[in-house]
Amino acid sequence: MTNLLLILLWLSRDQISRSILEKVAYAGTVYTADAVNTVIKALYEVYDYVDTVIVYGPDINGAGELIVEALRGVCNDAVRAPCEYVKSLSVRVVDLRWRGEEELRRAVEAFYKPTAEAARPRREVPLERPNKRLTCWAPHVLYDDDLEALRVKAIDYILTYGAESRDVLYSHLALQRRPGGKYLARPCDVLEDWPCGLEEVDVLLATPAYIHKSRLEVAMSTIRPEVYGRDVYDPRGNFVLTDSSLYHYSPRGVLLRQIELTDINMRREAQKLLPDHAFYLGQEYAARKILRDKYVQDRWKLQL
Image 1 (cartoon, helix red, strand yellow):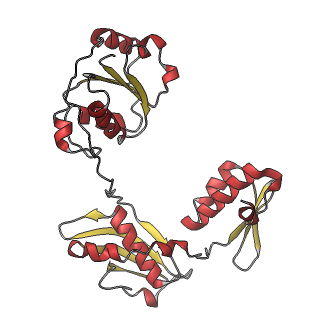
Image 2 (cartoon, rainbow, N blue to C red):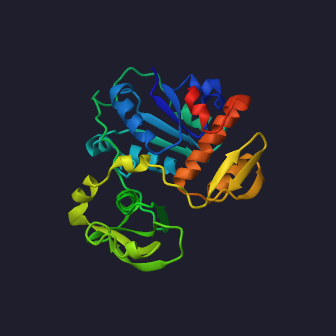
């Protein structure tokens, strides 16, 4: 047994010298800050004899910073273990983010020791189910030709990405129910004031669309996942895939464009569409690449 555990940020084990790997109890690759919960759980339940954790590699997305912070006893946003476990972890954290392998080698040599002594009591660590909101300040477009379905989508979006003020959760939404050009701009309480004038126009610029905090439980009870199972026709038309081309048709079947079928062009076109349509197009493109000459648009699913 050894007292060292090695966290590799965006690096695989085969990029690390074997002489280093032989001196650590475990070396694992991580890409997200949530991995710190697995590390905390393992330090209590499996590697209770580890007293030093080395965090090594390029911190590309900032996850490493949260991992280092949590291992040093800070109960930050990434932590899903009870804070008492974090604060009493008592491990030495060697922060080697963005450092070279020679520094890693020196750290391993400096802190390595074979040991059979427990560094902390062995305990089972419960992890809470993730249920957090990521605030997104940018405006977002939602489309549905059914007003009630559009309301559900707006509520769902606010609960997932809404910003928080003293009294409400809110987002800035463009709520579209028809492809026309008649607009209305106004605040909208999507629970109490719906449809906020949208029945008279094509697009409501809800600045903001909001839900009172006192009504969050009611808002959550209105979410119906089956709303997302409906087919909502994209007013931007439709696409047909062939061996080498992507054909773009208007809603009335007029051929608008013939585009070379490449990864870049598929991504380019998908980013202009409704999310459902973009998902469909990506799914069809993936199926075509996998099935090759056996691919027939839409019909391939019947063969599975």
